[in-house]
Length: 181
Image (cartoon, rainbow, N blue to C red):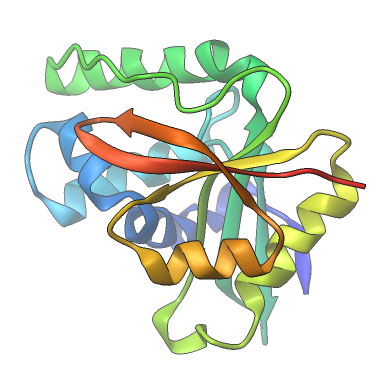
Protein backbone atom coordinates (compact mmCIF):
# COMPACT_ATOMS: atom_id res chain seq x y z
CA UNK A 1 0.00 0.00 0.00
CA UNK A 2 1.29 3.46 -0.89
CA UNK A 3 0.40 6.28 1.46
CA UNK A 4 1.61 9.80 2.30
CA UNK A 5 4.43 9.73 4.83
CA UNK A 6 4.07 11.03 8.38
CA UNK A 7 6.72 12.35 10.80
CA UNK A 8 6.63 9.01 12.65
CA UNK A 9 7.95 7.28 9.51
CA UNK A 10 11.33 9.00 10.03
CA UNK A 11 12.93 5.98 11.72
CA UNK A 12 12.00 3.71 8.80
CA UNK A 13 12.58 6.17 5.95
CA UNK A 14 15.92 7.71 7.04
CA UNK A 15 17.89 4.49 6.35
CA UNK A 16 16.17 4.25 2.96
CA UNK A 17 17.16 7.84 2.18
CA UNK A 18 20.71 7.06 3.27
CA UNK A 19 20.78 4.04 0.97
CA UNK A 20 19.90 6.36 -1.95
CA UNK A 21 22.31 9.20 -1.12
CA UNK A 22 25.11 7.87 1.09
CA UNK A 23 28.00 9.85 -0.44
CA UNK A 24 26.03 13.11 -0.57
CA UNK A 25 25.00 12.97 3.09
CA UNK A 26 28.58 12.14 4.10
CA UNK A 27 29.64 15.35 2.37
CA UNK A 28 26.91 17.19 4.26
CA UNK A 29 28.17 16.09 7.67
CA UNK A 30 31.83 16.12 6.71
CA UNK A 31 32.61 12.50 7.62
CA UNK A 32 31.66 8.92 6.71
CA UNK A 33 29.65 8.17 9.84
CA UNK A 34 26.59 6.11 8.93
CA UNK A 35 24.65 6.42 12.20
CA UNK A 36 25.15 10.18 12.35
CA UNK A 37 24.15 10.56 8.70
CA UNK A 38 20.95 8.56 9.25
CA UNK A 39 20.17 10.58 12.39
CA UNK A 40 20.45 13.83 10.41
CA UNK A 41 18.16 12.49 7.70
CA UNK A 42 15.63 11.34 10.32
CA UNK A 43 15.61 14.82 11.90
CA UNK A 44 15.13 16.52 8.54
CA UNK A 45 12.43 14.05 7.50
CA UNK A 46 10.41 14.66 10.68
CA UNK A 47 10.51 18.44 10.17
CA UNK A 48 8.33 20.55 7.91
CA UNK A 49 9.50 22.79 5.11
CA UNK A 50 12.67 21.17 3.76
CA UNK A 51 13.53 19.02 0.76
CA UNK A 52 13.74 15.84 2.85
CA UNK A 53 10.53 16.46 4.82
CA UNK A 54 7.79 13.89 5.22
CA UNK A 55 5.59 16.50 3.51
CA UNK A 56 7.28 15.55 0.21
CA UNK A 57 7.27 11.79 0.78
CA UNK A 58 5.21 8.69 0.15
CA UNK A 59 5.91 5.27 1.60
CA UNK A 60 5.20 1.75 0.47
CA UNK A 61 3.97 -0.28 3.40
CA UNK A 62 3.61 -4.05 3.76
CA UNK A 63 2.23 -5.75 6.86
CA UNK A 64 2.57 -2.52 8.83
CA UNK A 65 6.23 -1.94 7.89
CA UNK A 66 7.70 0.62 5.52
CA UNK A 67 9.70 -1.18 2.82
CA UNK A 68 10.09 1.65 0.30
CA UNK A 69 9.93 5.42 0.03
CA UNK A 70 10.00 8.19 -2.50
CA UNK A 71 10.65 11.87 -1.85
CA UNK A 72 9.72 14.36 -4.56
CA UNK A 73 9.04 18.08 -4.80
CA UNK A 74 8.49 20.84 -7.33
CA UNK A 75 11.90 21.77 -8.75
CA UNK A 76 10.92 25.43 -8.58
CA UNK A 77 11.01 25.11 -4.78
CA UNK A 78 14.56 23.71 -4.57
CA UNK A 79 16.23 26.79 -3.05
CA UNK A 80 13.42 27.38 -0.56
CA UNK A 81 13.41 23.73 0.53
CA UNK A 82 17.20 23.40 0.58
CA UNK A 83 17.82 26.52 2.75
CA UNK A 84 16.75 24.88 6.07
CA UNK A 85 18.92 21.84 5.28
CA UNK A 86 22.00 23.98 4.67
CA UNK A 87 21.26 26.03 7.80
CA UNK A 88 21.00 22.90 9.97
CA UNK A 89 24.26 21.52 8.54
CA UNK A 90 26.03 24.82 9.19
CA UNK A 91 24.67 25.06 12.76
CA UNK A 92 25.37 21.44 13.77
CA UNK A 93 28.50 20.62 11.79
CA UNK A 94 30.04 24.02 11.04
CA UNK A 95 30.09 23.16 7.35
CA UNK A 96 29.03 25.67 4.72
CA UNK A 97 28.35 23.22 1.93
CA UNK A 98 27.60 24.47 -1.56
CA UNK A 99 25.55 22.12 -3.69
CA UNK A 100 24.79 22.43 -7.36
CA UNK A 101 21.15 22.75 -8.38
CA UNK A 102 19.94 19.22 -8.94
CA UNK A 103 16.58 20.22 -10.40
CA UNK A 104 14.83 23.15 -11.98
CA UNK A 105 11.45 24.74 -12.49
CA UNK A 106 9.08 22.62 -14.55
CA UNK A 107 9.63 19.17 -13.03
CA UNK A 108 8.57 17.19 -10.01
CA UNK A 109 12.01 16.17 -8.83
CA UNK A 110 12.49 12.71 -7.32
CA UNK A 111 15.11 13.39 -4.68
CA UNK A 112 15.28 9.85 -3.30
CA UNK A 113 13.66 6.56 -4.24
CA UNK A 114 14.66 3.54 -2.24
CA UNK A 115 13.44 0.05 -1.39
CA UNK A 116 14.76 -2.23 1.35
CA UNK A 117 17.19 -4.79 -0.10
CA UNK A 118 14.93 -7.61 1.12
CA UNK A 119 12.00 -6.16 -0.86
CA UNK A 120 13.83 -5.26 -4.08
CA UNK A 121 12.97 -6.87 -7.38
CA UNK A 122 9.23 -6.92 -6.71
CA UNK A 123 8.26 -3.73 -8.53
CA UNK A 124 7.89 -1.54 -5.45
CA UNK A 125 10.09 1.24 -6.84
CA UNK A 126 8.13 1.19 -10.10
CA UNK A 127 4.85 1.41 -8.20
CA UNK A 128 6.12 4.43 -6.26
CA UNK A 129 7.12 6.17 -9.50
CA UNK A 130 3.74 5.35 -11.10
CA UNK A 131 2.05 6.80 -8.01
CA UNK A 132 3.87 10.10 -8.61
CA UNK A 133 2.65 10.04 -12.21
CA UNK A 134 -0.91 9.90 -10.85
CA UNK A 135 -0.50 12.80 -8.41
CA UNK A 136 1.67 15.12 -10.51
CA UNK A 137 0.89 17.46 -13.37
CA UNK A 138 4.60 18.11 -13.92
CA UNK A 139 7.07 15.84 -15.73
CA UNK A 140 9.12 13.73 -13.31
CA UNK A 141 12.86 14.36 -13.10
CA UNK A 142 15.66 12.59 -11.27
CA UNK A 143 19.40 12.09 -11.19
CA UNK A 144 20.94 8.66 -11.53
CA UNK A 145 24.61 8.00 -10.80
CA UNK A 146 26.57 7.31 -13.98
CA UNK A 147 28.05 4.31 -12.15
CA UNK A 148 24.63 2.76 -11.50
CA UNK A 149 23.48 1.31 -14.84
CA UNK A 150 21.03 -1.03 -13.09
CA UNK A 151 19.05 1.93 -11.71
CA UNK A 152 19.26 3.70 -15.07
CA UNK A 153 17.77 0.62 -16.79
CA UNK A 154 14.86 0.64 -14.31
CA UNK A 155 14.13 4.29 -15.07
CA UNK A 156 14.41 3.91 -18.84
CA UNK A 157 12.01 0.92 -18.69
CA UNK A 158 9.57 3.26 -16.94
CA UNK A 159 9.89 5.77 -19.78
CA UNK A 160 12.48 8.21 -18.43
CA UNK A 161 14.70 9.79 -21.08
CA UNK A 162 18.22 11.21 -20.83
CA UNK A 163 18.45 15.03 -20.74
CA UNK A 164 22.03 15.83 -19.74
CA UNK A 165 24.90 15.08 -17.37
CA UNK A 166 24.78 16.87 -14.03
CA UNK A 167 27.35 17.25 -11.27
CA UNK A 168 26.21 17.14 -7.65
CA UNK A 169 28.36 17.09 -4.52
CA UNK A 170 31.40 15.85 -6.42
CA UNK A 171 29.56 13.10 -8.27
CA UNK A 172 28.44 12.86 -11.88
CA UNK A 173 24.85 11.93 -12.65
CA UNK A 174 22.53 11.57 -15.60
CA UNK A 175 19.48 13.84 -15.47
CA UNK A 176 16.46 11.86 -16.69
CA UNK A 177 12.93 13.11 -17.36
CA UNK A 178 9.60 11.29 -17.64
CA UNK A 179 7.06 13.36 -19.56
CA UNK A 180 3.53 12.69 -18.42
CA UNK A 181 0.81 12.18 -21.00
